[in-house]
Image (cartoon, rainbow, N blue to C red):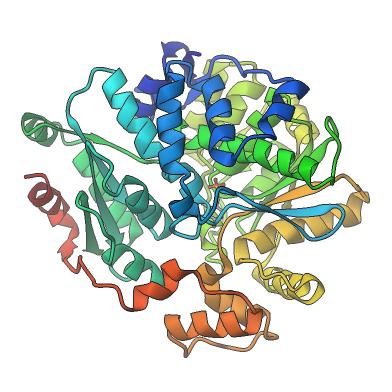
Length: 498
Ligand SMILES: *Cc1c(COP(=O)(O)O)cnc(C)c1O
């Protein structure tokens, strides 16, 4: 399988090259030249396998330059029992005959980013070797919270790699900060930056594009790479869990083989729902892809009008991982829906960066409308939805999953569709404990409580167990307490790369 660039369809590289590069030198994203097709028989066979083996089978269709042994090595290290608590890496929980929750947050950091960031380091390590690179890979990350921790856990003690994470000193929650400052591993480093997330991100970009400095570290045997969400090595692993969920619904007797399901995804950067689109295009029986947004509803508008317009107010919501106005992975969808029209995609993206908007051709708009349903949900309705599902099913969901459930409820109201449905649940409710706790307590204000009190209270009121990974933070040793100014981020990195 070769990979093309969304901005130049003549590009043709192997998966290893695409994963190592992260982004194409022309600024485009790597996409598979063809979408592999699967049969009902293939899906049936998948169902007899545990998650990691399902992953090896699906990834094998896309990463054809990786041997079976290499893929087995990657999946067994990434999706091991000690990292996800069981072999059931992404369990499905049925709430009623029709509605099923795909819990993607059983990994080490309690958020769905683990599904991809646990395996990326192994795919990348192999990619480095396969492309003839002999340097040690240094991952630099600027994080506003969840990604930094998930990347640290993923790269922790992975041979041949080092990871340096920067976070804004006052821009992350106390739990998120503790998750990072107590990080274990011989090859990790964490530093706070005086400034906001943009300062940290700009600082990282500056290091990435500093050619003199890149030469300096090359002499020491290092090369930079990124764990960015547009890397194909993060997207491909996400396709797996939609197949896995389908198998689980078959086993549960919720559907029969060949029957279509709906998939609802709380969406930010459009990566998670794009993976579901690939699954559909591969032949997984999917009816509607339902794209759920919070008040930053740029995608809802795009799906209904064909106009992507970021000239709008930005809202800070209770589902912060979806507070995004530029959904980078949408570019991949546009490439496929325009039949690989790289010129047109480049035009859309130029227009987006110059004018903050673009409008797709009518044919593209029609295709989008036939595949996707868009919907959005306010913070108020997010809280109401958490309360409703707790009341009706004694099931506690986080704020992001609640957005998906609310949009699904709207969809049912509008259509009466009785198709079996899978909701992608993207975070453990304990990660967004204050908003969840308040929602299941009629809006009571808990802002005077500290993080560990909030965990205890949510456990008590929600009747759910605190994940050990979060409760143990209270007693874990802080390893990284340095804070630097944004001008000194390169010095910080340099002292790590001795
Ligand atoms: C990253 C994230 C999302 C958004 O996923 P995308 O792939 O960016 O659309 C949703 N929920 C949570 C909890 C996340 O961390």
